[in-house]
Image 1 (cartoon, rainbow, N blue to C red):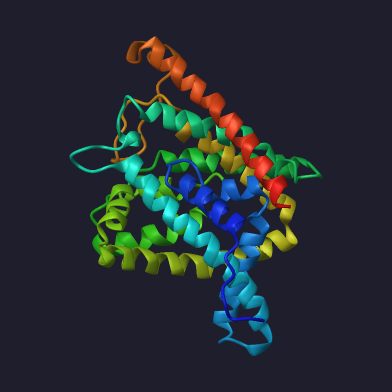
Image 2: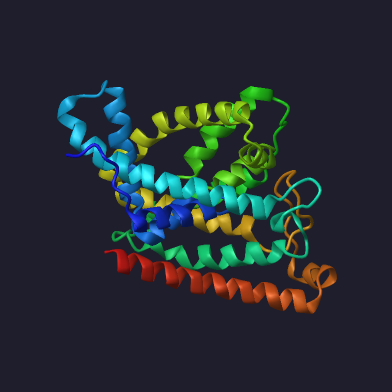
Length: 305
């Protein structure tokens, strides 16, 4: 096989979409991978890549390694480009907060992805063919775990150590539909820290963050690969619950919109006290756009097959 990396535009495009999702707290690139039908390929490619390194580059596995590397490189390039651009728009700067930190625009962004995730919950669940009581229980467990996690708060004064922990948890979370890497960073108080480090080319912060990410990948990917090969329907049951739980984070109307943590959601009665009717209608409309985005992504999946 040639050592040259072949550029596949559809893979790059999928990476762009995954990077966009990973930039939004409550949305996971893994969710987009599920919608696009590349989730299993992503996990298996990562497993092949890491196994090749762990076994000290065996020559008999070289061809499979290159296939996985080409896929991951092109996908990762798209994710990096998209994450850089989208976080610049969503986070902004200290002088000019981005769309996700502005109360006049944030509900629209959250609503768009609320509609997208809500419409895509069926993706993992339709892969559960034998819907036993235990699998409903696994789904419910995943749902509860996300709700519990979003109510946690952490001290973010851990310096480089918290960056390593953030990297390990966030990059692992990005692979799980329903568990958002951005949400993990937000909970740990590192969302704007990492986003600003990317924009400002702060390589020290990026180094510690990616070091943690590598630790997370080397430990999580083999486990996930084993689970998908041996307990696929159980995994999909849990992923369904995780995605359902993430909807609470994506609820568009919140008490505040800042980078200090997950803000409490507003109830139906409180929404009308805090937002203008025009804004509420616009927010709901963006939710329907999220549904439309889901069906557009499914068309992309069919076009790629």
